[in-house]
Length: 253
Length: 293
Image 1 (cartoon, each protein chain N blue to C red):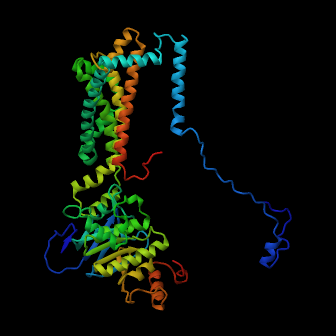
Image 2: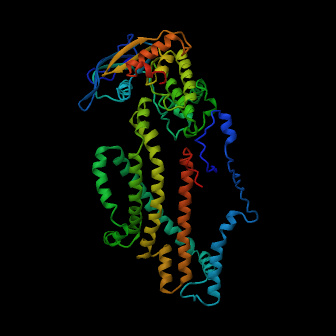
Image 3: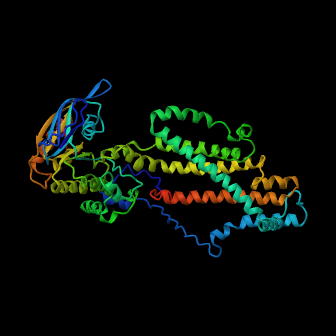
């Protein structure tokens, strides 16, 4: 099942097998500047893809286009109809109890049991009935993940979901995402500026530069991943140089 | 901390330990422990009643010794007596019923107008273009100034009073609801879209709840305006209600009746405020900041 968010292509459900995301010749201009310039991208079912790029390179723009939040584009974009987004901020509705936030927008009556199940998956069984403002940063981000996953997406779009968390919470939530992905096996596009995060989580790492995918390599290390192997460090140095950080400066990110 | 005058940089010891030993003594002060204040005896709520009761007592004393004569200001005891009499005659209840009804009808009309106009102006660009500019212009007109026109248009019956109240309610409420709708967090709207909410669902689940805090502020403010409009409306050509009682009393220098009427206005105003506060506590329970003090 796929639908088109392109202006040029009308949405059609062909019913045949398609990729969760297929992008051809995507261009997005802000004024005269083409932030995305003839970009091509395919994401395979179940694949965990990390998209790296320097600040302002257009990686969040690409994610927003895939989320159908930005339609001022040329080119062809086909994405899974069942998709979910988790943003940098949790974006929970503060006037709805946590569990109502989780199932908001699902067809039919608000299904508490389903919300409870989704919250249990992210370890928030004790937070079902509270107001979102009571949650800590990590809890709110986990709730946002539950809200995304309860939709059983074919494509999960994550827009720097860990960057607002403190270092310890970030590691825990990253581990949770890896675990959830292995259970749900949905395709994931993780937009991040953190090379270590990308290498720890993804099957495939992309670097967005000059409006296109400039770097596209698989990460083949077995999971769970150690971050101190020579392979990892070599890959890390390589990616950092793609992102404009010279080898000597890459000891600390 | 006190540092000795001698300059120790000249012969700094190589060993860190020696450095520690050589240091001049540090002056230390114990941090003051704040005592938990327990004033014992009088609880705070009781203490707070002292000054109002004192003022009333002073008033009574001044009346009793003859400093305040009855034609200037009746004594608290007389006022209480008068209120009791008016209650027994049924005048008090009648006046309150008539005035409350005027406020309620005016409030209902104003509320309806404000909600409809603000929603149209807040949600639709076209609505904003058509509605907002005239509303912003009209709101600068003092509502009380419209009384002569209202009398010419609607006579001296109930209509001008109710319409005056409705107008007084509409503007503050409109501005706050409109502002609330326009200030909805665009990020939440985006999130709602990615959750698959359609336009109506977005309005229902995101826009209206987000505008609610602001709308309730508007409601409180417009209730204040409503009472003000009532007072003005009733002092001019009323044949019943609190304002009518007040006007009649003025002709006979019955300051006791006038004060009873003022107290009624105050009580009704406080009651209205209490109702809105209770409403806020229930509707805005999600805001942890909204506990007040």
